[in-house]
Length: 211
Image 1 (spheres, rainbow, N blue to C red):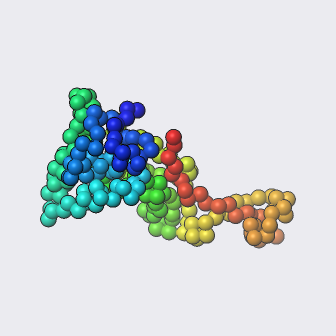
Image 2 (image 1 turned 60 degrees about the horizontal axis):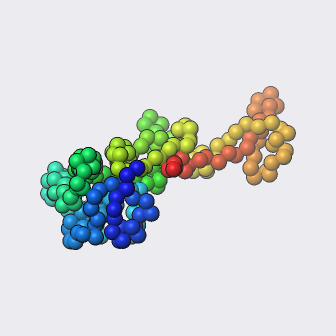
Image 3 (image 1 turned 135 degrees about the vertical axis):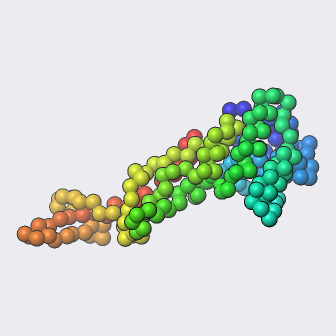
């Protein structure tokens, strides 16, 4: 992936860079510098404290109508110029003008690992296996590197299981007797049938970023 020439300030923010352009932010001041920093900060899942001024500036732009707010934020981001390469200009313009303005939340592991509630059975829970719209938008740009992966099965759990953090898995009597009592459960059924179970943790950190 191409890399951007950044000022010492931006270098301290990112260990790896996201964009490739032919300018340095050190040349910019005021809103132009904030606009360029906003593009970078809103393009990554990691937003250190150095990002706060530019992000605060961006989200402080509000108008009475939603469409007017969108246009005003686009105008602010447009203060950040593009590089000399026509190809780079086109891709950067797309990121700046058609992707960043429509980002509504950070594409972070915390936001991806959100709880989804069952549509028909409201007591069901799981970590949503679908990407957020913001992640989808950012991943559509060749100037961003986000590679989230869902590592769970996507199955639903009833509320009792979810709150407890475990599900019951049936096991043999031999395995049952080898486990600590607090990790097991016994159920009795008709005709003197005995069923042995162990508690299996529910994986809730389903989303990870792959290198």
